[in-house]
Image 1 (cartoon, helix red, strand yellow):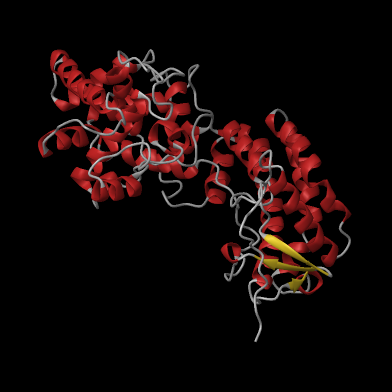
Image 2 (cartoon, rainbow, N blue to C red):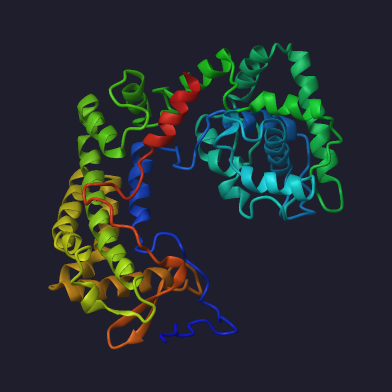
Length: 431
């Protein structure tokens, strides 16, 4: 009977923690190209009304001093807890809150503890919570400042929001004061947690104020005008991509390739940047498919696979045959685009130049594993553990978590996203 080799010891030394994202180091260039095309918008953005929740939250928390007593809790984070808890308590399972960051952990915390705190909420809320996800865009639009205090446009959005809610300025200020008291009660405990002492009616009032699908006409109009502004706060190609959805030129579920192809026609001046994105994605797809083909081959056995065998597989060869050509094309297109593209060319040349030297499928397979190991090692001071363990004799074993049994996607598809999806979602919410 075949047994699996014991790759885990009782104690994993430093440098063996997981690094489960971006195993080939392709994301950095893709992200820089996307930011150049549409500044401040991130792929994790789902629902535009969280900009309003952040803006009103900046007014709720601006008079609350952050004493630093609890390093992992700030007034803005407590506000986020309250908003997300209100949405889950009032609308759990409803499409009205689809796309709410932290919904799953909040649902679990309410069921288990009946409150949220730093231990039960997202471990990295500055990245994955709505304040973290939407911060760059909120700053770019002038809704909040870098400390999540009110920005120069905060009062204007507050007025539009209050108008839609049927609130006079005095009523809006009273509601904000009520929410400020809830934040203070929640943060003042020895161990801060949501503790507003509310009834179901109070939770529903907060949920209704920021439910993603319940933005009023004045608020939607103002947010739309801010997103589409061509002034100093302009968001790059966002207005043009928006127009593609608005005119019906592309459907809301159109692929990135379809959106960028249509964008070239609508905005020819963007052609060099779009061509650079397309060329880079062609290279990224070839490299990713070749790497994933090794994963697929290695996943079919518990005893490891030789890289020479993996290199002869039907999944590996089509991708491997195009890697060098697509790498050269990507470098040329990035250079031709200038600016950010030229800087990305330097990253590509530095990070992926070794693939120019692979003269056979087996050499490419070996280089892919070496490259992956180098990328994992560079992810932190102590490094991250590779997805493969080397067995000697040119054989590798893939760890269980990273096994892959699916077929590789077609070679003409993108690996990364370039902000079409969040813009489509924003367009749907603000129609």
